[in-house]
Length: 185
Image (cartoon, rainbow, N blue to C red):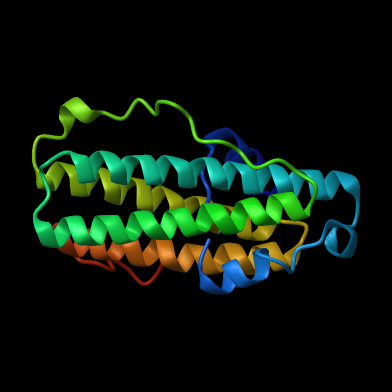
């Protein structure tokens, strides 16, 4: 898949996500004048970041649905709230990066149309969350090579690692192999 195709895929799917090294990079080190080679490239990086922010808002909302469902055991609820906190930190870091590049961060939607009626037990909630986390891993993997600003690629890789850990923990909680292969596909 070409870089342009991956970039278009990311923009269409609205998926992407950030972590600790990424937070450090994004919270003050991204500067459009210093890193962007052209206004178009900076604008494209901002669009990709806003796609990531949108996906992070979706994850926060999804974990809220799970937390409020009454279907999670106390131990699972604690992990879900922790993961939701990670996504909130990703939003904060991504938003700072967007603003440092002269952009306006994406806002959360009022409704995500989650299949709440299909969530009937803890397993359903975990499967739903695992699916979103797997999608985030794929999206960040696609974003890494298409950023013009290579610092953003490093930050996306850091967030990808966090999302992959979430996915592995959720798979384990579902009784599945947490790392089903040597390569992500």
